[in-house]
Image (cartoon, rainbow, N blue to C red; front, side, top):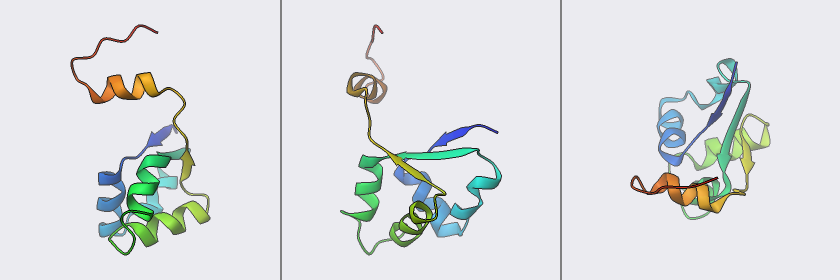
Length: 85
């Protein structure tokens, strides 16, 4: 089993379908960046996915991680970027 990193679209879709809690059956570790957590649970308070993500984090199903390599994140967001590591 492998790791999964979820963005907000995946969390909201799985929450809508009622499948967010099934991720541990498929993945050893499920992560989401803090920015995604904030988008859903802070700025998106009261919207679809907030309750489910809060519960998944509380239950240890999803781990919220701070991004350490901003250069890499920016490169991944820019399809034309070239990054030397």
